[in-house]
Image 1 (cartoon, one colour):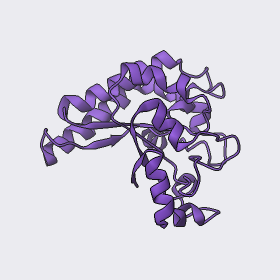
Image 2 (cartoon, rainbow, N blue to C red):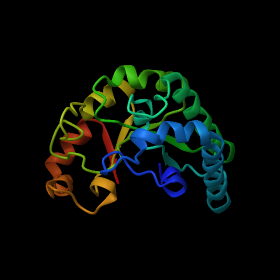
Image 3 (cartoon, helix red, strand yellow):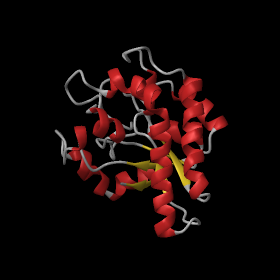
Image 4 (cartoon, rainbow, N blue to C red):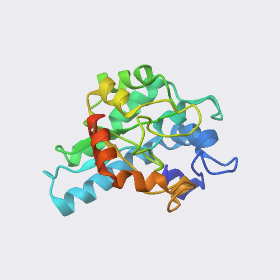
Length: 206
């Protein structure tokens, strides 16, 4: 996402405007797959140079990966099998330099059929953790996010994947500090809510 932002000026789907990843993201991937893979390898190589090739770094992979399969994409969304293959290639580029790296797969909480979306990745790719991106996650709810039609729960994702979840909590739309409802941040500081989310499979916060 950041590569598309810096090279093509594309912005997140939840930021207003037509020049977004929800429209042009899939086409960017089709045209720039080699650059994407080279970028992953570059960062993995640079990390290995500084921390050693035995570093157990956690890689929180591409945010909102599901959005590139959406029908809103110009030229059509990417097919799921294509996305599974590409994800595997990105992981392979990381593992080439950091064989002990841990890989985390992003949760798209608006995809209410998580089983159908996640299963092919879980079966064919190396995935160690799950994580959220974009902030605005709920510490005081069984649901990952309060947005309309985002019905996915923390416990559901943990049940389907068997993986611990890293919750991204600290900012709002487009990376803005805070959010319309400050409880998105404050709720995570409450011990009762933390214990409830730990029971649901959350293992860390960012």
